[in-house]
Amino acid sequence: MTILRLAFKNLLGAGLRTWLNVFVLSLSFVLIIFSQGLLDGLNKQAEEAMVAAEVAGGHFQHPAYDPYDPLSLTDAHGSVPESLAALATAGKAAPVLVIQGTIYPGGRLFTVRVKGIDPGQTVVNIPTSFLSAAPAGDEIPVLIGERMAKMTGLKAGDAFTLQWRDARGTFDAREATVVEVMKTSVQTIDSGQIWMPLARLREMTGLAGEATFVVLAQNAARPADGAAGGWVFRSSNDFLSDVRAMVESKSAGSSILYAIFLALAMLAIFDTQVLAIFHRRREMGTLMALGFTRGKVIGLFTLEGMLNGVLAALVAAAYGIPLLSWMARTGWALPGNMDSYGFAIGERIFPAYGLGLVAGTTALVLLVTTIVSFLPTRRIAKLKPTDALRGRMT
Amino acid sequence: MTERPLIVTKDLKKIYAMGPHKLEALAGVNLSFDKGEFAGLVGPSGSGKTTLLNIIGSLDTPTEGSAVVMGQRIETLTHKEAARLRNRHIGFIFQTFNLLPVYSVYENVEFALLLLGDPPAVRRRKVMAALDWVHLADRAKSKPAQLSGGQSQRVAIARAIVKEPDIVLADEPTANLDAENSHNILQTMERLNRELGTTFIFATHDPKVMQYLRRKITLVDGRVTADEAMDGRVAAAASSATGGTP
Image (cartoon, each protein chain N blue to C red):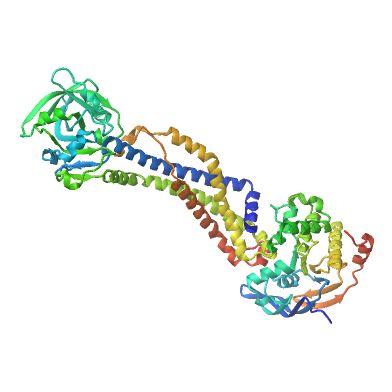
C-alpha cells in the first residue's frame, strides 16, 4: 500500500512528463481498440450480410456441384429431394438452379451464372419479388446487383440477349430485361451473375423440378442427411469459415499498426524510466537510507511505470468511450476501392467492441507496460546506497 | 551495571579499488559509542569520516574488521536486514537535505513511519510532534521547494527523529547553511539529544559544529588520531538561553 501510494504521488509529481506519457499511451489504447474493433465489425458485418443474403441456415447442394468450378454446372443439378421440396413448399427453403450462360449487353459478351430462384421466397434477403413483374412480351425478367450493373453497363429497364444451353445441350437465346438493380454488399450474389424466376429457368432449360442447391431458412429444421437424397449439406459455418479466413488474411496490416502503436507508447515509457533511474539516483539512495530494500525501490519504480498504463486506461476511457461509441453508431465510411476486398463490406463499417477486445487490450498494454517499466530498473539491483546518495550509478 | 555500547568498531578497514590502485579510506578504526552521545567525526576531506558514518549506518560494509551496531554485525547483514536496521534504529541527516521533492513537509516526515507500518492516528501524532520540535508545524503542507535551506534541514531532522531512532547520523549537516541557520539546527539537535537521549554522530569539518560536540574524534587518512571529550559550551549556553524547550 505504501509503495502504491508513493508510486502514485511520484507519478503525479512528475507533472507534464507523466501526462504526456499517459496521453501517448491512451492514444495507443484507443487506436488499438478502434482498429481491432473495426476489423471485428468488418468481420461481423460481412458474416451477417452473407448469412442474410446468401447462406441463411446453410445449403443442401447437388453432389456434383462445385461452386469454384463453372464446368461442373452442366451436371450439377437434379430433382429436389422430397424432404427439401416439402420445406420449400412451406417457405422454409429456397431451391436455386444454376446454369452457365452468356449475355450480350450493348454488343459485348459476358459469361455469367444464371440463377433461378422463386420470386416469392423469403429465405434469403434478395429482392426477388421484382422478378414477379413480367416485362412486355416474352422477355425474361432479370435481377442483377450493382457490381454486375457497373461491369456490364446495364441499368433497370435495359434489355440484352441471353444465351444458354438447355438440358439436351442445345444452344438457345432470348431477350432479357433488367427489372431491378439491387444494392448488396455481398459480392457472391452479385458479380458475374444474373437472377431470374426459377420456373422460367427450369422451363428454358427443360430441367423441370430440378435445382443445383437448396437454401435452408435460418429457422428451418435440417432434414437428416439420409433424407436429402445424397445432397451435401454445407452449414453456415462452412461458408463463414472462408470469410473468417479471408478477414484474418486482411488483418496483417492491422496487426502491424497494433504493434506500431504499442511500440510508440512503450518507447515513451522506457525512455521515461531510463531517465528517471538516471536522474533520481539520489532519491533512491535516500529511500534506501530510510529503510527501503533494493527490491522495494525496484518495485516502486516499476509500479510508477505501470501506473502510467493504469492512468492511460482511465484517460483513454474518458475520451475513448464517447468517441468509440459514436464511431460504433455512425460507422466508418469506406473508400471506394474497398469493394474489391473479396467479401461483403457495406459502404460503412460499424466497429464492434467486445468485452474481450477491451479487456484483452487493457491487460496486454498493462502487461507490456509493466515489463518495459521493469527492464530499466534492473540496474537498481546493483546500486550501492552510498553511490546512490552521491548521485552515482554503481 | 554499565550499558552496552550502541556502536563498536574493531580494526575497521575500508579499501576502495581505484583501477590498479587501492585507496584505504579506513585503516583500522577502533571506536565505541554509548547511548546519548553527541559526538563528531572531524578531519579534512578524504579522511574517512563519511565512510565510517556509512558503515555505522549499514549503508556500506567494511573490507576488514567489524562494526557492531545495536548488537548487529554490519558485515554479516543481508540487504534486507540492513534496511530493517536503518528503518528501525537509525536516522540520517544529509548535507543536501535529500528531501523527496514531490511530497509535502508532512509527507516527507511521515515517510519513515509508513515503512514502520504505524497506524494513521499514531503517524499523525508523531509527525506533528516532530515538526513541533523543529518549529515547522505551520509549514506541514509546504513542498520542499518552498522552504529555505535552514527549513529544509529542519525537515530532514524531523524525518530523522520522527521514528525515535537510537542513533542519528548527520553527514555535514550545516555545510549548505549560513551561520545563523547552522546554530539553529545544531541547537535543535542538541536539545533532541538531551531530551530524548538520541545518540548523534556527525561527520563534519565545520568549526560551528565542533563548538557543540561533547566528543570529538579526529580522523586523518582513515586513522583515529585523537578522541577527546569536549564540554559542549555553546550548547549549554544556548540551552540555558532558550530554557531547553522548543
